[in-house]
Image (cartoon, rainbow, N blue to C red; front, side, top):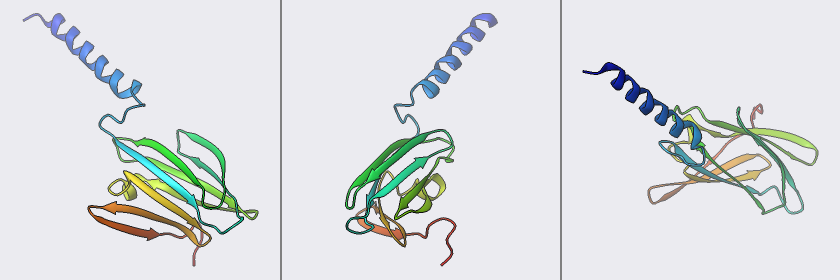
Length: 143
């Protein structure tokens, strides 16, 4: 058996696989595609300023008018550690929330809708044929 030839083929195969997993961020190959829609439900006339980040990506600040939407699309990583948090400001007060935590949301969040309410964010998602709702408190707030 010609070992240098086998080694060369192995190195080429590993290089190709590494290229696929690192250069194809636009595709969710072996990862979960996540679509989040965030709707301002604070009340008529209240604008929401939302600024979302992960440890690797800063999505910038966006102003969302009442009943308007902000959408996020990304791929959850293969290790299940993807997390995005958002600072949300209205009427001069900052609130923040982990809008996507892979351990909490991966099984239900291929497409999720978040309604931002003064008391906290509420998620709407579909499991099978049923629509589910789950509301949370703002991070750092104990009620």
